[in-house]
Image 1 (tube, rainbow, N blue to C red):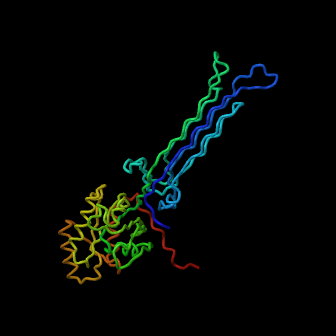
Image 2 (tube, rainbow, N blue to C red):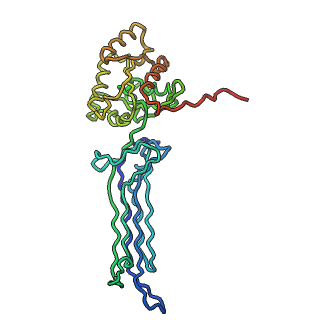
Length: 343
């Protein structure tokens, strides 16, 4: 399934039905009087979060959503039928933005959350509504109110507990594949990852979700590369995992590039807790590991962990460090291992 995290949709609620002008006319009934019914209300346009979706690809193929109009009123005091509502089913984590792409209409962060986007028009009153003691045969009725038209943007921000940051080929996808059942594409060239990947990792009986996004490059906040398009997916994370490639030969420059890009991007990313990891230590001896670790700790001003996603060395320690920053409410119990055969 193709990944899509931004979509433009056109909405229109239903118009209300017109009121009816009618009079009761029956044989042998001396005093008839008005009996025109009211028009039905137009259908509303709603957005609702549902389970089982992690992309907005459905809105690539259908962009127009129009609710039904209300039916007009009829004689014999019959009210018109209300128009049917229409519901946009979106994944959890979807932001609904106004046409300017800045004003947030709703932030759909909970399963089953519903928000009204376009209210349907009210049905018009029939002439029965206008009957008074001094006007017993009114010949007027109200038209139905028109529906509301608007254009909105849907932007998906994946809800994950940990966000992976790093330059292309820093080993992010390898780490995700080594610690979860996710199978992202892994290859020895930049920008192998073209869209975000999610993986559920477990440590010490607890599980949390890790999001891998395309690698950042210098100037990403200005639109270079792919990472800036997907940084929104790590805005909701509790902690960021910054992977630095120890075999690149430009260790400190690589670290500074990522830090500068998240500071320039804003949205509070630079204030989030970060776990810095020196990756690909399987390519180094003990002396080189110690030297690069000291350099990186001096530049970052904090503790640096050692890890190799390819060999699995140090991954458990990294997962435990990440778990310490995740609120207990966000953690899930890991399922028991049922791999053991039972008769």
